[in-house]
Amino acid sequence: MHIATVCLHPDMVLGAFKDGVCGRAFESGVATLRCVNPRDFASGPHRSVDDRPYGGGPGMVLRPEPLLAAVRAARANAPQGAPVIFLTPQGKRFRQDRARQLAAGAGIILVAGRYEGFDERVVELEADEELSLGDFVLSGGELAACVVIDAVVRLLPGALGDQRSARQDSFSSGLLDFPQYTRPSVVEDRAAPEVLLGGNHDRVRAWRLKQALGRTWMRRPELLAARRLNDQERRLLEEFQADARAAAERAPGRLRDSKNSRVASRQVEKQ
Picture (cartoon, rainbow, N blue to C red):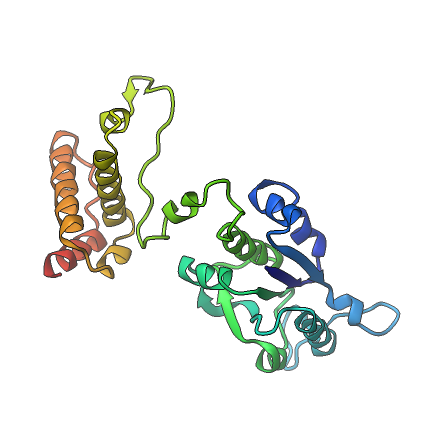
């Protein structure tokens, strides 16, 4: 897979992938990473890439000419059909399903902003889509680009030692991940669940699904409310809810009885 990032600070992006899963993926050729700097396309002795915003106000705006040239250079060197994605607060929320879609393609071009953002005409001329990581502000889009790259590359065949890891991650099935345990079996009087130690794989699978459903119900109920449960999932969730209520009676305050979880519970009952 070919990945290009248009950004003013290439070292921030390239340096983020010197090690780890993605670093090994790039080193082994599972994917390639290239950075294109708009400053290389700027004119004048100072190679300026920003200017004051029309209409006044604080901060600076990325100038359209060098940014357009950089984006078009990145597009010219990318596989045909690789989407140009601007990372902006106005974009659609980046989610796991979009990461999977991007990982299935031949390449992506990520455009990272700085200062007060892009001249809107560049977005109109070159953006295939806009993505946002969430409702917060970063100093620049390089970090956002790194997040998108990491989320996509780890899904590529050969990136992980065991590809099942990606399939079991949170959000891959629309649910939060189940809790994980490893040796030793007891840590400060807290024992790992007995079902995980018994070697019955069917029981382990059922327990993990039950925990994933229950965690999602308690922590991200909006994900569960949007999911149509099958008979097994409904039964396992009802078991988890009964266990949680019993635990709350023994230790008040343990069950998070939020408005959202009550809404999700009612939604599940209607399905």
